[in-house]
Image 1 (tube, rainbow, N blue to C red):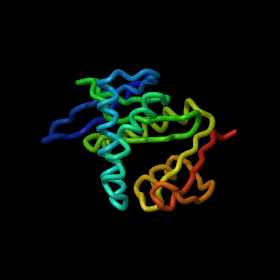
Image 2 (cartoon, rainbow, N blue to C red; image 1 turned 45 degrees about the vertical axis):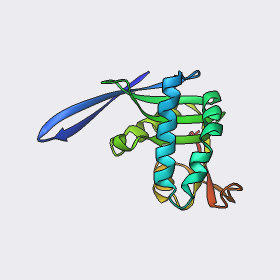
Image 3 (cartoon, one colour; image 1 turned 135 degrees about the vertical axis):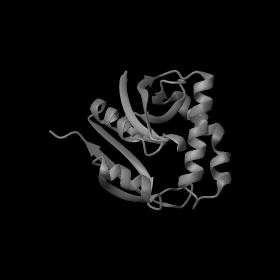
Image 4 (cartoon, one colour; image 1 turned 90 degrees about the vertical axis):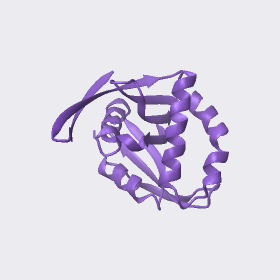
Length: 166
């Protein structure tokens, strides 16, 4: 478990937020509900170039896949709410999402740092039109492995890789 602190100024008052990052192998039904809400919200917001019914139609399949994935959860210590998660299949990042209300607070960077401390190599695919996500991954040391086309959406994507320095 890892504690992170983020200071935020609200109405001239400094507030500190504490959150934990933990590995979860068997998410509870409420955890899975929250993860799926973040997943759907994130996909609808980041991928407006893909019809919304693609994402809503894939909820049952993704819910099943997420329940079997290696999950890293970020929880706000005030209310224990999940504010971000990463789903991995071996060293492949199948999903990396931060709740809209937690973006810009260093949550995604802290989660990625934890992953990079834990795994010697990580790969992922990101749609080329998802410029913000691609920029985030490159800032965290990911480099282009190859370009591909997602068979289900027809969208171009970059397959990125990160490896611990030797």
